[in-house]
Length: 301
Image (cartoon, rainbow, N blue to C red; front, side):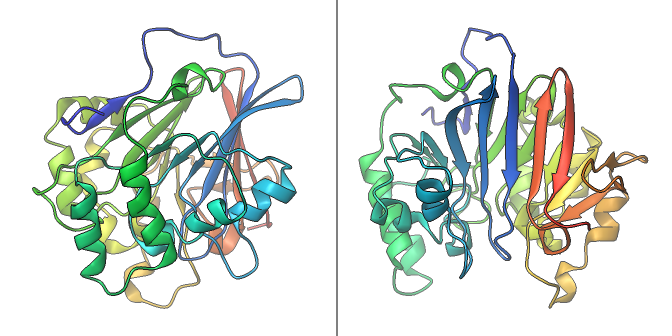
């Protein structure tokens, strides 16, 4: 990966965008986990996952193995090196899931990541797996994401170490696109990290035409950066978080003010929404095809 803090996996070839993209943001309370794949004529393509958060009753590792009947997770992205974003990371290895490609912020060295994690206390099994992966996964993937996902593309950005030395502002920001639809996953990026990225014209250009923002830092006030909305007006915002316990979680009104006035229509409920939350809606699924996208939720919201 280049050291300029951006990876564009689109390549030079533009694949025909037939079929559909299915992207689901799972309800893992104060955590993060999303899965996506391409599907055509009822046949599912390769599987990608963004973060590996879990709950006491649901784990992505067992869902992939037993729910989907897969032995392979083709692409794994970890946006943030904190436990809530990778709580089931070791579980993937324990279940024997083959993970051939993974992405994270490559700027810190393996030793840098180890030191940052140790500063917060003893390493969890998932943190040890993260650090091992930093060492084991290097070089260019043999099967690039954007040439093997049926036309789904992604572009990532990150801040460099040691300009930032905290895991939140070293989050990997991921833009996923398919058939005119774009969603951004910014991990736990906080205001200083956002503002550093906004100094980059290529990042500002990538923000344009983004349809859905997954709120940074689980919708906490520290992840809300008003300046990013100078470059795009999202159709809606998604917040992945547990029930409200702290004042810093009460950001739904702030996000509601920066989205498109009409919001989005949720297909499964028929309701118009500006902000969707896993604590209210359960999992949130986006189905993209023929230049349109639809939203379905686990609960009525």
